[in-house]
Image 1 (tube, rainbow, N blue to C red):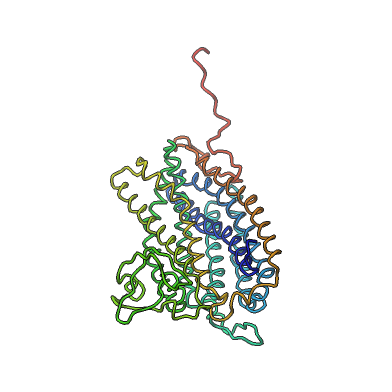
Image 2: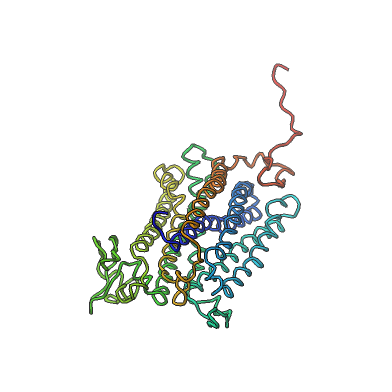
Length: 477
């Protein structure tokens, strides 16, 4: 396929499948916590709007959860099919970590998911909320094990190599490796931000279409509060994560910054834009801000950090790619901060739900949280190259002995099937979002009907249906 080697095609295939997969767990993590908050607010305030929003978003959560599970199964198989030498070398660590994820997170989610989705009128409100919380915790536990495995590949420790294979000697060091806390926090907050942007865009879209009802306003308001509170936290976490990466993976930082070498006594400027040329070993057309990289990465005015020329050519990540994926992620983060600040200003002026420029901006930002996650993932994984286990095993030594023809064929099959299957799923999920929550006023919730709960969230009958209500007689009668 287009002259690519088998190694490159194996990497493309893995990158394609995980790019599809990663968006579903991200939304699942955020929506699960959002649902727990909505149900908690309903139990606390007895405001039926929160209950209706719970039912509305639980439908979308169910579809998204299913697509995440299906797409995740493919990832596990690829370790054995396309990366068999990696599995043989490091399977004694990655295998148990993924098993722990199944035994804890997946069983926890699966056990309480049925109660959450289908037990609404079969268990008490408190027990149902507990089930929702358990599902939310399960998504976070799942992320913990997955990121522990991937973080170990970035900053491996707690192992020995015996007879050509990795043998764990300290599981606490394996799990709590140096980059794990930063990457777990960064990814979890990114999932919350992506979900907030998704929910906020849904609310803004309905408001632009004239569907100005209380549930829609609450959706937008909650999403914007999350954005305001969490975006600065994510920026701080990103800074801490960058300092950790500089310590353990300096070549990745050099590639992200397009930084090739130091001049004694001079600071390192921040290159806003440019084109890192791997062959020429310099960043062309650079637009720079003096001293800023030194301040960000060393917290010193004239601080220096290693440039790419300090690493052997075979040990350098592709700066041309990593430089830009990193800037896409950071640029979208700045836009998130801008959207949050704008929402605060409009909230102060009491025009949050009427400002069409703001609402259009919120709609446009809807997919940007997921795009930022993908850009960050590409930065992390491509920046680790040429290593699959950093400093221990090279990627070229991890790939299976497949031909380029076989990998080209399977890649094309994956592309066709994924677009058909997950394209249909995403389309259905977006149609659910477009339908919007029902506008049912509190005055229509009386007596026992205030506590009715539909059994099946995907086919629930509206709670305001009361067959005992007689229609008023006409004046002619």
